[in-house]
Image (cartoon, rainbow, N blue to C red):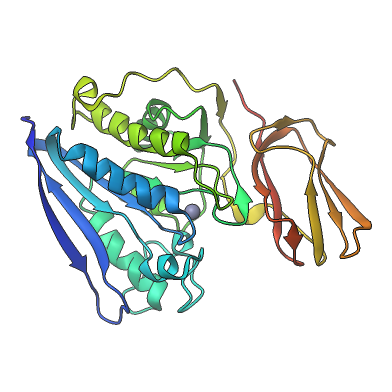
Length: 319
Ligand SMILES: [Zn+2]
């Protein structure tokens, strides 16, 4: 293995029937067995990942690199252009569309393109998300940590990322990038943070340093040269649950959501999470924790419509 200053090649990936090309930046360093697939912007209202991928690429310009990086700053160009979670062309959620379908709609075609050209040729995947415009999430690194070599490598990388919380899933639902990677035997990590329409510099720093820490762990960069010290162990680990945010509590009416807790809080069974108010502010329902757990996602925008997600509770942390 030999590290060398990387050469960058920009590609515009296109497939039949796609309305917009997907930007891929390929960095080729010295010889090495690893190819890192790095994705941002799978959801179009999550600027953290998009900006962090571009920041990682700038950091790597000056660093000796062993192996290859396949970086896609904006995985869903049509959702990003609309500033929306899903593509306005077909309403598709790219994080539920993998491994994709080259004969499907816009979102299915993008998934297939990313699956074939970015994920399948890689040896490790990092997918950078955040809570999006209407929600808030605590900063954490997550992984499918099943009892396989792939699962063990994913869990170790999630711990090495340097996020204050780690969420290890025994399984996750189909359609996600990390599920598609696992089906190919490729280990992966995804990360989440704040969202809520604002951008925290410390979160961006954690994302960029975390990607470099994973790369150092894979032997692609030198941790000291990259300026990433070994992080403290995560303060909190969750070792159960699928992390599926579609499985959260939803509002039964149009009105207002008044939250009682903060994301990252660990709550007891029965503890109040939010009050759902009707349009005139009268209490309609108190949302309580059905079991002990960590508040993994919380409505940030006050106005709610029937069917909107109010909160997602992760299982109780193990440490
Ligand atoms: Zn996302």
